[in-house]
Image (cartoon, rainbow, N blue to C red; front, side, top):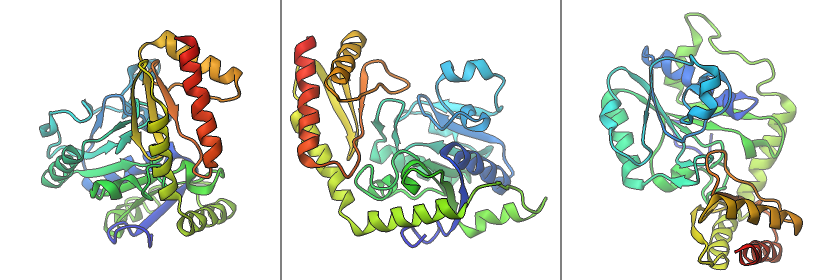
Length: 303
């Protein structure tokens, strides 16, 4: 917690990202005594029941209805923030929507979300499972936005490949988990010593290196190298980028062409025209450039 703002001083370890979000939802309900959640269309928070309930994509939700009640969805970067009211336990969101298409939150809009939550007495949950640990250039994306959540959810890169997740909040908010009943939220393997050792080693290495600068360098190189009229946009931040092409068939053919040349790409879960570009932060600069050249050449070849 030494890397976090003082109000984020208590960490609850779990095993995965969706478990972190489940714990955050429960913590918000317990602290506020409320049951309503506000989430965002095209957001993605995991596949367990509660996380799926606040995931904003019906194709994944429909087979499992009815899900949690009292969840309202707004447009990301859109209007309707008055929906966050005195009945709202929490707003859950990604600072940069990942599977939704690599959509960064507008900075002023995100500050308005923070203000609205404060006014309504609702908690703000940031799902930084994809954006965390220098993926966007900062240790956590909220640092760049200068907006501090009430609950922070982490996983993925946290333990360098070992099963590890966490949700982080204040000691005051966590008080609700201590009573009625005692041990409100438990986990069999959360905080496993091997995973914790891996997380400690991973964080130590990240803090000692220039990984934030590496992420920003990846962004600059990618945006400068990927220049073609079939590319509508290369968006995102740091090493969390999305390349949107003109149509789905072109995207499919580019992915297949790159695969044949030794570069594995994929779509996001929510878009058939967006290719994810999320190289490891340790990638060699020459290898990065070679990979981007293969991608660009594949676009030229299939157009």
